[in-house]
Length: 117
Image (cartoon, rainbow, N blue to C red; front, side):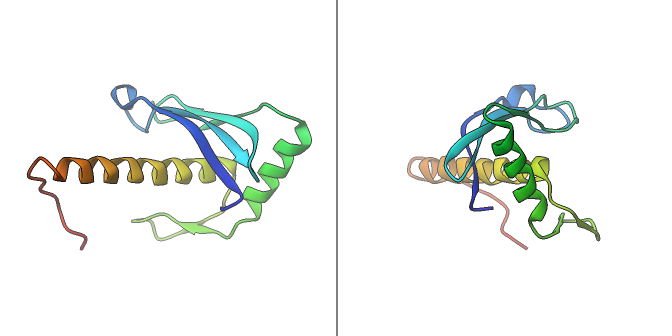
């Protein structure tokens, strides 16, 4: 997934119900190719072509060529596609965001959390 990245992420935690509500720009090899958004109501993450069609097609083809992934807690492998890649990149972004917040809070507060099993 190193060829695909997301930037300009806007996360609307208060609007997130079933899924995370967010929007972002999607880049392929450093070039902005698409925009993505999820309304946070349990539906799919939608991606929109904002450049040349060939660039968007290349993005979709690359994401589809990635190896199958396994979702934690589900005993099944899933094919990768553009939606799953964007969702995983957003989850990674969210984890980094919360990690940074926790590290900042640790400077001035007592932080308690669950350890990794």
